[in-house]
Image (cartoon, rainbow over all chains, first blue to last red; front, side, top):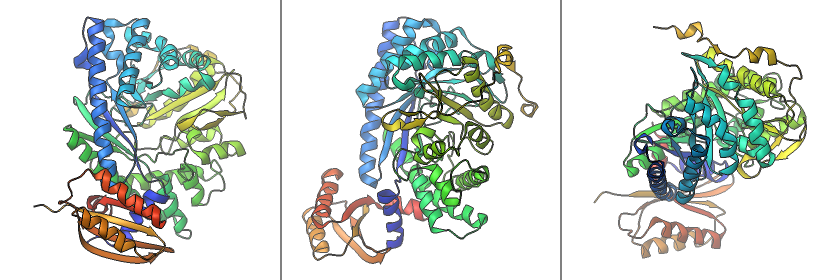
Length: 452
Length: 92
């Protein structure tokens, strides 16, 4: 037998006992060819394309799940930034209608989330971007599956503070319109947003992408934790080595599924995103990996080093496994969806400040962070701007997904339901940056952007 | 004809009749057993069966379900996976 029983047992245990799965297969669809001056025709073209391709995705993905005995947890769709295709129809009413069309098309195909309801405004806001932002509270509260995003900066363009200043009010309005602010869970603001990220809510089909493309996101916190636990006594170099080898294996599984699924769909294979994706499942937690390193509770001093080690090892193992590593590939950790993270917030060991500093060594970001509902809008804008400034200066993707929970104060527990998990409202700094934020304008591109 | 190889993995406690039940099912479905090996690891009895499935004409879901059924009867985890996933994960 070319493969040994030990190797077969290792793979089987990863799937059966350590939550190894393919976290997402995301089909990117170009919608620019659907644009039409007649809005009714435009909507119909979009519905037919999204529902049709989505149905094919689900059918083919299910076949591969059976063939390889590995679950593909999410099958999703990312589309061309909607702000771009709506430029000739930029009214709030039409944006909401378009969101409903995407929502229905996704439902018809059996897709749980569809990304791309957003815009690229790193240098400035188009009229369409502005109307889209105004429509977001309605869109996020009146559709189930549509995810919004905004790219408000890049290392080569700088950061658009005027766009960020629209987000505090938008998020608070969305929060008021949905139970426990869950509408805000469907919106991410980013800088240096990758055009091929398969993970929601920040997924969209970039303008540099082909007509259709298949991107894959792997999983694996449970698998990495298990291997770390088996290696209690090794030093940091050896620890990096064992993580690297494990991530190599799980990335290869992702790449196999991605390539074959793309081939069966007769479209190009895009990327494997090697971010370790946490879920609410027991053991499927990045925080627990870090705690298995020897950190008592995530957020303790030493956590930044632990994340730095983990992410570097993950990238090295992933890069060896696939020539197509892309997307975020930096672990954007949703706090409410990661049991270990929530426990750490409850214990008081993990703060907003520490999360922000972790962004320095990976893309932890501020993902699914609940804050008090009475946080001033300008403070929400400032929290976002701080997080994103790290990305601009360090030439990497950073992002924020923030939920100001109406009527809740720091320490309160909020059940967000299902995949979104449970959040503990985090305390925020009570001092204001309002005057600074009101200056508006654009943070100039940093000196590191001048590379030519 | 090109060989289509898959692994059937059995994990649990060793029992009488495991091989008999599985091989009977495979025989009825025109699936050939190419190799079998087994070992006790981390307290688990693990058996891996390399099978050739090009003679099997029904949808994959059927055989997966039948194997699962035998697994339930015997209190074991049984699954079938195409060999490529093991090759990709364990060979550079």
